[in-house]
Image 1 (cartoon, helix red, strand yellow):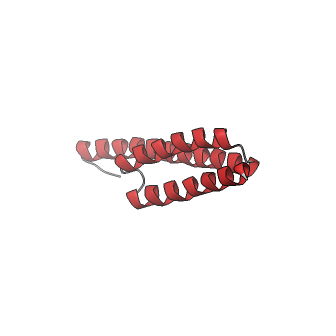
Image 2 (cartoon, helix red, strand yellow):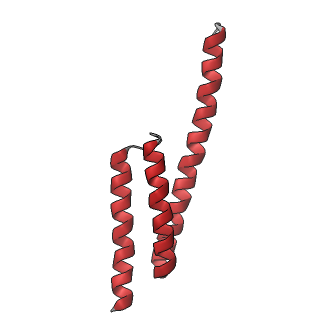
Length: 92
């Protein structure tokens, strides 16, 4: 436990930041889960809307350095590919 006043303040700030980042990562996971459920149900229009909001959230979190940019790119690509596959299947 820190003894210096500034060190105590840093501990409080870090805990608050950790909690906020954890909630944002949870929000991201929920958004990805919703998108995967829509893909599984083959709801193309809803999946496209959810994909747009999920990618926006990914970009925001990567910009704030909550997730790494490579993870953002990888997830964006994978999710877009899944949505693209169901849209191709639905048109066939």
